[in-house]
Image (cartoon, rainbow, N blue to C red):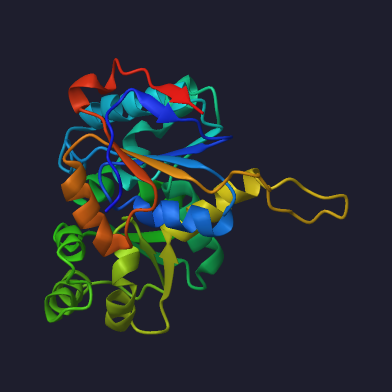
Length: 288
Protein backbone atom coordinates (compact mmCIF):
# COMPACT_ATOMS: atom_id res chain seq x y z
CA UNK A 1 0.00 0.00 0.00
CA UNK A 2 1.41 3.44 -0.88
CA UNK A 3 2.34 5.77 1.98
CA UNK A 4 0.00 8.60 2.88
CA UNK A 5 0.92 12.03 4.13
CA UNK A 6 -0.89 15.25 4.76
CA UNK A 7 -0.49 18.54 3.00
CA UNK A 8 1.24 20.89 2.78
CA UNK A 9 4.75 19.57 2.22
CA UNK A 10 5.14 18.02 -1.26
CA UNK A 11 8.30 16.41 -2.68
CA UNK A 12 9.70 18.59 -5.43
CA UNK A 13 9.24 17.13 -8.91
CA UNK A 14 11.35 18.28 -11.84
CA UNK A 15 9.50 19.63 -14.90
CA UNK A 16 6.34 17.75 -13.95
CA UNK A 17 3.14 17.50 -15.98
CA UNK A 18 -0.16 17.91 -14.15
CA UNK A 19 -3.00 15.46 -14.88
CA UNK A 20 -6.47 15.53 -13.36
CA UNK A 21 -9.78 13.71 -13.47
CA UNK A 22 -12.92 13.46 -11.38
CA UNK A 23 -11.74 10.09 -10.12
CA UNK A 24 -9.60 7.14 -11.17
CA UNK A 25 -10.47 6.88 -14.88
CA UNK A 26 -7.81 9.43 -15.75
CA UNK A 27 -5.20 6.95 -14.55
CA UNK A 28 -5.51 5.31 -17.98
CA UNK A 29 -4.32 8.61 -19.46
CA UNK A 30 -1.54 8.87 -16.89
CA UNK A 31 -0.38 5.33 -17.69
CA UNK A 32 -0.38 6.10 -21.42
CA UNK A 33 1.63 9.26 -20.77
CA UNK A 34 4.16 7.41 -18.66
CA UNK A 35 4.67 4.81 -21.35
CA UNK A 36 5.55 7.57 -23.80
CA UNK A 37 7.41 9.81 -21.33
CA UNK A 38 9.00 7.36 -18.87
CA UNK A 39 11.48 9.88 -17.50
CA UNK A 40 8.92 12.62 -16.89
CA UNK A 41 7.52 13.45 -13.44
CA UNK A 42 3.75 13.76 -12.92
CA UNK A 43 1.26 15.18 -10.47
CA UNK A 44 -2.14 13.46 -10.66
CA UNK A 45 -5.22 14.86 -8.95
CA UNK A 46 -8.31 12.71 -8.53
CA UNK A 47 -11.31 14.76 -7.41
CA UNK A 48 -13.00 11.75 -5.86
CA UNK A 49 -14.91 13.81 -3.28
CA UNK A 50 -16.98 15.31 -6.11
CA UNK A 51 -17.16 12.39 -8.53
CA UNK A 52 -18.98 11.89 -10.88
CA UNK A 53 -18.77 15.05 -12.97
CA UNK A 54 -21.01 13.64 -15.70
CA UNK A 55 -24.27 14.34 -13.84
CA UNK A 56 -23.33 17.78 -12.53
CA UNK A 57 -24.21 21.17 -14.13
CA UNK A 58 -21.56 22.34 -16.64
CA UNK A 59 -20.97 25.57 -14.69
CA UNK A 60 -20.14 23.57 -11.56
CA UNK A 61 -17.73 21.29 -13.41
CA UNK A 62 -16.03 24.35 -14.92
CA UNK A 63 -15.45 25.82 -11.46
CA UNK A 64 -14.05 22.51 -10.20
CA UNK A 65 -11.68 22.36 -13.16
CA UNK A 66 -10.46 25.92 -12.63
CA UNK A 67 -9.74 25.23 -8.95
CA UNK A 68 -7.76 22.12 -9.83
CA UNK A 69 -5.94 23.80 -12.70
CA UNK A 70 -4.89 26.69 -10.47
CA UNK A 71 -3.66 24.27 -7.80
CA UNK A 72 -1.57 22.20 -10.21
CA UNK A 73 -0.15 25.26 -11.95
CA UNK A 74 0.80 26.53 -8.51
CA UNK A 75 3.05 23.49 -8.21
CA UNK A 76 5.00 24.67 -11.25
CA UNK A 77 3.84 22.07 -13.75
CA UNK A 78 5.03 22.50 -17.34
CA UNK A 79 1.75 21.30 -18.87
CA UNK A 80 -1.79 20.46 -17.81
CA UNK A 81 -3.75 17.43 -19.06
CA UNK A 82 -7.50 17.31 -18.48
CA UNK A 83 -7.90 13.53 -18.32
CA UNK A 84 -11.67 13.78 -18.00
CA UNK A 85 -14.06 13.89 -20.94
CA UNK A 86 -16.73 15.86 -19.09
CA UNK A 87 -14.29 18.52 -17.89
CA UNK A 88 -12.68 18.64 -21.34
CA UNK A 89 -16.11 19.20 -22.87
CA UNK A 90 -17.17 22.12 -20.67
CA UNK A 91 -14.04 23.67 -19.14
CA UNK A 92 -11.18 23.47 -21.64
CA UNK A 93 -11.56 27.00 -23.10
CA UNK A 94 -11.54 28.54 -19.60
CA UNK A 95 -8.50 26.51 -18.58
CA UNK A 96 -6.58 27.45 -21.71
CA UNK A 97 -7.36 31.12 -21.14
CA UNK A 98 -6.26 31.21 -17.48
CA UNK A 99 -3.39 28.70 -17.52
CA UNK A 100 0.25 29.87 -17.81
CA UNK A 101 1.20 26.52 -19.38
CA UNK A 102 -0.09 24.47 -22.34
CA UNK A 103 -3.37 22.63 -21.70
CA UNK A 104 -4.63 19.45 -23.38
CA UNK A 105 -8.03 17.79 -23.18
CA UNK A 106 -8.99 14.31 -24.30
CA UNK A 107 -11.66 15.23 -26.84
CA UNK A 108 -9.78 16.95 -29.68
CA UNK A 109 -7.09 14.23 -29.97
CA UNK A 110 -9.81 11.58 -30.10
CA UNK A 111 -11.71 13.43 -32.82
CA UNK A 112 -8.56 13.92 -34.87
CA UNK A 113 -7.67 10.24 -34.60
CA UNK A 114 -11.20 9.20 -35.59
CA UNK A 115 -11.15 11.54 -38.59
CA UNK A 116 -7.92 9.87 -39.76
CA UNK A 117 -9.24 6.37 -39.12
CA UNK A 118 -12.70 6.49 -40.70
CA UNK A 119 -13.19 5.22 -44.24
CA UNK A 120 -16.92 5.86 -44.59
CA UNK A 121 -17.22 9.10 -42.63
CA UNK A 122 -19.65 7.58 -40.10
CA UNK A 123 -18.16 7.79 -36.60
CA UNK A 124 -19.65 6.73 -33.28
CA UNK A 125 -18.79 7.93 -29.80
CA UNK A 126 -19.76 6.49 -26.42
CA UNK A 127 -19.35 8.26 -23.09
CA UNK A 128 -21.05 9.49 -19.93
CA UNK A 129 -24.34 11.39 -19.99
CA UNK A 130 -22.47 14.65 -19.39
CA UNK A 131 -20.02 14.13 -22.24
CA UNK A 132 -22.62 12.97 -24.74
CA UNK A 133 -25.09 15.64 -23.63
CA UNK A 134 -22.53 18.38 -24.21
CA UNK A 135 -22.26 17.32 -27.90
CA UNK A 136 -18.55 18.20 -27.71
CA UNK A 137 -17.54 15.18 -29.77
CA UNK A 138 -20.49 15.40 -32.14
CA UNK A 139 -19.91 19.08 -32.97
CA UNK A 140 -16.23 18.55 -33.70
CA UNK A 141 -16.91 15.52 -35.86
CA UNK A 142 -19.62 17.34 -37.80
CA UNK A 143 -17.33 20.33 -38.32
CA UNK A 144 -15.03 17.94 -40.18
CA UNK A 145 -17.87 16.85 -42.44
CA UNK A 146 -18.37 13.51 -40.68
CA UNK A 147 -21.62 11.88 -39.62
CA UNK A 148 -21.70 11.42 -35.85
CA UNK A 149 -23.65 8.90 -33.80
CA UNK A 150 -23.45 9.14 -30.00
CA UNK A 151 -24.62 6.97 -27.14
CA UNK A 152 -24.47 7.63 -23.41
CA UNK A 153 -23.44 4.53 -21.45
CA UNK A 154 -23.94 5.55 -17.80
CA UNK A 155 -23.47 2.11 -16.24
CA UNK A 156 -20.13 1.22 -17.80
CA UNK A 157 -18.03 3.22 -15.34
CA UNK A 158 -19.54 1.24 -12.47
CA UNK A 159 -18.88 -2.04 -14.26
CA UNK A 160 -15.20 -1.13 -14.66
CA UNK A 161 -14.75 0.08 -11.09
CA UNK A 162 -16.37 -3.08 -9.73
CA UNK A 163 -13.79 -5.18 -11.57
CA UNK A 164 -16.39 -6.60 -13.98
CA UNK A 165 -14.83 -5.46 -17.26
CA UNK A 166 -14.69 -9.00 -18.66
CA UNK A 167 -17.93 -10.24 -17.12
CA UNK A 168 -21.20 -11.40 -18.61
CA UNK A 169 -22.78 -8.25 -17.19
CA UNK A 170 -20.36 -6.10 -19.16
CA UNK A 171 -21.07 -8.03 -22.35
CA UNK A 172 -24.83 -7.61 -21.85
CA UNK A 173 -24.64 -3.87 -21.09
CA UNK A 174 -22.31 -3.06 -23.98
CA UNK A 175 -24.44 -5.06 -26.41
CA UNK A 176 -27.56 -3.21 -25.27
CA UNK A 177 -25.96 0.24 -25.49
CA UNK A 178 -24.63 -0.44 -28.99
CA UNK A 179 -27.64 -2.39 -30.27
CA UNK A 180 -29.17 0.42 -32.35
CA UNK A 181 -25.97 1.87 -33.77
CA UNK A 182 -25.86 2.77 -37.47
CA UNK A 183 -23.20 1.43 -39.84
CA UNK A 184 -20.27 3.13 -38.13
CA UNK A 185 -16.74 2.13 -39.08
CA UNK A 186 -14.99 3.97 -36.22
CA UNK A 187 -15.94 4.24 -32.55
CA UNK A 188 -14.42 6.72 -30.08
CA UNK A 189 -14.13 5.47 -26.50
CA UNK A 190 -15.17 8.81 -25.02
CA UNK A 191 -14.58 7.96 -21.37
CA UNK A 192 -11.25 7.20 -19.75
CA UNK A 193 -12.69 4.05 -18.13
CA UNK A 194 -13.64 2.50 -21.45
CA UNK A 195 -10.18 1.28 -22.55
CA UNK A 196 -10.63 -1.35 -19.83
CA UNK A 197 -13.66 -2.58 -21.80
CA UNK A 198 -11.90 -2.60 -25.14
CA UNK A 199 -12.21 -6.34 -25.68
CA UNK A 200 -15.92 -6.40 -24.82
CA UNK A 201 -16.63 -3.38 -27.02
CA UNK A 202 -14.65 -4.77 -29.95
CA UNK A 203 -16.59 -8.03 -29.79
CA UNK A 204 -19.88 -6.11 -29.74
CA UNK A 205 -19.10 -3.98 -32.82
CA UNK A 206 -17.00 -6.49 -34.76
CA UNK A 207 -13.43 -6.36 -36.01
CA UNK A 208 -14.33 -4.11 -38.96
CA UNK A 209 -14.96 -1.17 -36.60
CA UNK A 210 -11.86 0.69 -35.49
CA UNK A 211 -11.76 1.74 -31.83
CA UNK A 212 -10.17 5.06 -30.89
CA UNK A 213 -8.73 5.12 -27.36
CA UNK A 214 -8.83 8.73 -26.15
CA UNK A 215 -6.18 7.99 -23.50
CA UNK A 216 -3.63 6.78 -26.03
CA UNK A 217 -4.18 9.51 -28.61
CA UNK A 218 -4.08 12.21 -25.91
CA UNK A 219 -0.79 10.82 -24.63
CA UNK A 220 0.52 10.86 -28.18
CA UNK A 221 -0.35 14.55 -28.57
CA UNK A 222 1.12 15.56 -25.21
CA UNK A 223 4.32 13.56 -25.59
CA UNK A 224 4.97 15.15 -28.98
CA UNK A 225 5.14 18.55 -27.27
CA UNK A 226 7.66 17.37 -24.68
CA UNK A 227 10.05 15.53 -27.00
CA UNK A 228 12.64 17.88 -28.52
CA UNK A 229 13.41 17.50 -32.22
CA UNK A 230 16.92 16.44 -33.26
CA UNK A 231 18.72 17.95 -36.21
CA UNK A 232 17.56 15.06 -38.37
CA UNK A 233 13.93 15.89 -37.54
CA UNK A 234 13.30 12.89 -35.31
CA UNK A 235 11.95 13.22 -31.79
CA UNK A 236 14.11 12.18 -28.84
CA UNK A 237 12.92 11.46 -25.31
CA UNK A 238 13.69 13.90 -22.53
CA UNK A 239 16.19 12.30 -20.15
CA UNK A 240 16.13 13.43 -16.53
CA UNK A 241 18.42 12.10 -13.84
CA UNK A 242 15.67 11.81 -11.24
CA UNK A 243 12.59 11.55 -13.44
CA UNK A 244 9.72 9.16 -13.55
CA UNK A 245 8.11 9.99 -10.20
CA UNK A 246 4.39 10.43 -9.53
CA UNK A 247 2.55 12.21 -6.73
CA UNK A 248 -1.22 11.67 -6.42
CA UNK A 249 -3.56 14.15 -4.74
CA UNK A 250 -6.98 12.84 -3.71
CA UNK A 251 -9.87 15.01 -2.50
CA UNK A 252 -11.81 12.02 -1.15
CA UNK A 253 -10.81 8.93 0.80
CA UNK A 254 -7.25 7.87 -0.13
CA UNK A 255 -7.91 4.23 0.76
CA UNK A 256 -10.97 4.13 -1.48
CA UNK A 257 -8.95 5.77 -4.27
CA UNK A 258 -6.19 3.17 -3.95
CA UNK A 259 -8.72 0.33 -3.89
CA UNK A 260 -10.59 1.49 -6.99
CA UNK A 261 -7.37 2.43 -8.78
CA UNK A 262 -6.16 -1.15 -8.37
CA UNK A 263 -8.80 -2.13 -10.94
CA UNK A 264 -7.39 0.40 -13.41
CA UNK A 265 -3.85 -0.83 -12.89
CA UNK A 266 -2.79 0.39 -9.47
CA UNK A 267 -1.11 3.47 -8.07
CA UNK A 268 2.59 4.15 -8.41
CA UNK A 269 3.89 6.84 -6.09
CA UNK A 270 2.72 8.65 -3.02
CA UNK A 271 -0.90 9.56 -2.28
CA UNK A 272 -1.54 12.87 -0.54
CA UNK A 273 -5.00 13.65 0.87
CA UNK A 274 -6.25 17.07 -0.25
CA UNK A 275 -9.63 17.88 1.33
CA UNK A 276 -11.90 19.51 -1.20
CA UNK A 277 -12.66 22.25 1.32
CA UNK A 278 -8.99 23.23 1.18
CA UNK A 279 -8.42 22.82 -2.55
CA UNK A 280 -9.20 26.40 -3.61
CA UNK A 281 -6.95 27.93 -0.94
CA UNK A 282 -4.29 25.21 -0.64
CA UNK A 283 -0.72 26.22 -1.39
CA UNK A 284 1.61 23.27 -1.57
CA UNK A 285 5.18 23.79 -0.39
CA UNK A 286 7.71 21.67 -2.25
CA UNK A 287 10.64 20.17 -0.42
CA UNK A 288 13.74 18.40 -1.82
